[in-house]
Image (tube, rainbow, N blue to C red; front, side, top):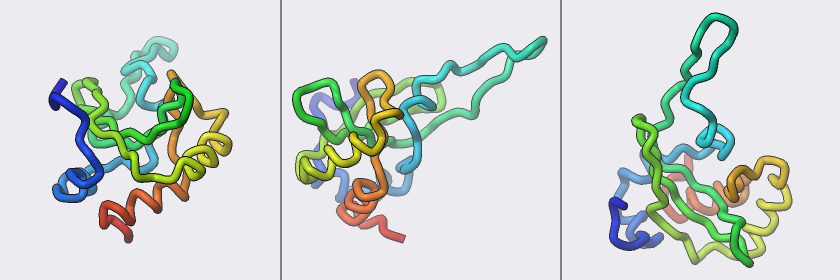
Length: 124
């Protein structure tokens, strides 16, 4: 683990590197997909995923918003937990994206994305 403990929203706000390298639209299925697959006679490699990925963990009693760091070398770890987001917003995102949950990870929806962008100062 890169960090001894999960970093906070306050710490994310203080370092622009996080918001500059956030992969806002990455899906859990993409993250967990094999690096390569065989298609006929060829082996096809997927495009490397490198950056920070917000996701909603749905393995506990309540959904929680986390940020995962994913490297081009296929290393991934959860680095931050965002406690400040309203639970109702997370529940709505989980209901909206129920069919996209993979390995206990649910993608964020547009409302969560906009909330997090606002908090991080990353609104377009």
